[in-house]
Image (tube, rainbow, N blue to C red; front, side, top):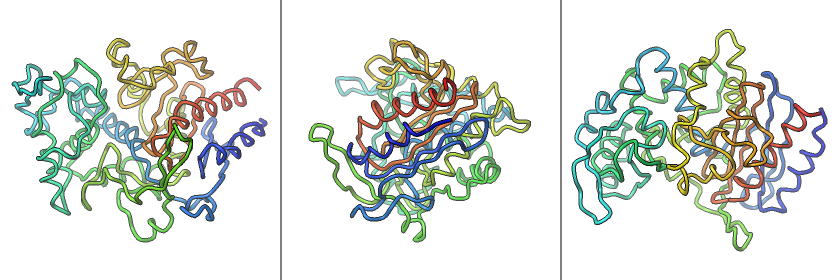
Length: 375
């Protein structure tokens, strides 16, 4: 396997306003390639290293979905169940109409609506009920999710797709059925079994010293700007966001995607084949996704918490139908292919970067497939 072309491409990224990146590739459960390039501080002097830690934002979501689907496998959660069965605050939801009026919802939110982002929830943190809850510095997951339930839905559950706090709510469901905090559950059932010792919801002084500096990209001006050194989705010291709360290292996230890519062949997989097949099966129609789901432009549909390749020929993609994964607000991306036992993750910290999602990711993905399957 010759990765020279991929290495050359990764080393060119500072020219495209990606100051630092750590890329790992796995095949048949083994690390076959890693390239760390660039810097991870605001002054552009400190090199990216294995010790670098990252806010992964929405790349928390596939881990949350894995936790939920583990509960489904054990019969603790049913996808057709109403969320109100687990969280009573969602019993009597309202719907906000376009004219500003509010009416009772005709449908109830189901677990499957949370996972497929068709619940009707939004991603606002600045509603009065949520802002009031966030005045508590030790706001718990339970109390914040109750505040989320206090606001009206944007549409009837199951009728539209909208990226939202749905996976934060799903994390709370895991807490209810297991009797553990979400962090405790992840530690026991995902992090410890996989040896993910660097992954946490808690920012300690030691972790903070190694956190990569964050930037924001202006695609029009083709420049990046330093931004505040924090994760705005961590709404309190006690809150464990299933949608965007984790801090990790590239090596740790690599352990997760590698384990998911070999699950069809492992004697004791982190998640069973039936559950993974359900995760990567499109759950939302093309018509509903049109105009709402940017990944759709690259041939992807949306499954249970992950993008999933549906039309590789439309995207000119070299990955097969069923390749799946997700990305984060700071530009990091992963993919998992259990059929070919291939997985990839790269972590960066450049927000609002269309370059990362629409140029860097497909370029890296296709180079990996060329190297591993077509060489």
